[in-house]
Image (cartoon, rainbow, N blue to C red; front, side):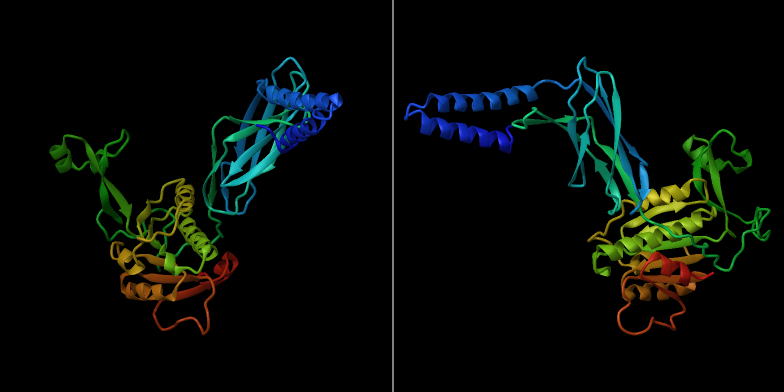
Length: 374
């Protein structure tokens, strides 16, 4: 590819020849030919293969929104001569990042780092990496795609919160009540038998019907369960910043529950996003799922979403409009504790009261942590 400087030299050479040749100036013709030859030589120079090994590393692979993430570019000269250096260009969500790699002696290597934009949440492809090879005079340039794109997952930000207790306490030695059959263990579903499962939990009727050994999944009904609902309707938020804050609030609430190994159902306007049962590593899964949540034109209102939620425990509804408060108030009798979090500007007037719902106004995560019930 001929650069602007190369095309300028081509135009100047052509003009010099057109003016000088009719007047018999041989020097002008010689200079014109030399200029064209220089551009041609530059183009041939860029066709040569670069004897270098390039490897890119994105670290960390998962990062909270706004926190730093870098790409490490490992370059090694595998040729027999000194490499003059090059320009590498990475593309991150439409933004081009240029990285200058200095000259490399034979057999040497160099690692160059550069920051990646993390302002926007979501799965962010990094690359493919383009290596620009130019001639010494900058008359021609060729871009070569190297390697494949890496993935950077930008997840929501969180703030430390105590989990909603819903008026119940977790016993330090296990179950908090002996009134239910088998302590406080309740039936939660069936799954395939795994080596090590207690044979007393085998569901023999399902095993006989399917021919596959099935066991009952039990849950402690006295554990403080939480239903978190994130309003994903586009009309519920004035802009992107409000929705991003709503996702951050939902992530903070969900992580507060899963870090204590309590059950959680995380719902959006398009269905159930996650059903955590108190296992290890579920907080990371919460952040991964919420990293890719977007507003959907087909999202249902919170009242419709709550009809599919199991009653009991705590309910936390996050939205950017106070019209969603009616859904929280309608579900008040189904849950032990109901919290409605409104994100963004509350507008004129005071916060609604008298609904039997704890209403929190949060313009940022710090305000959420200060107003969160304890």
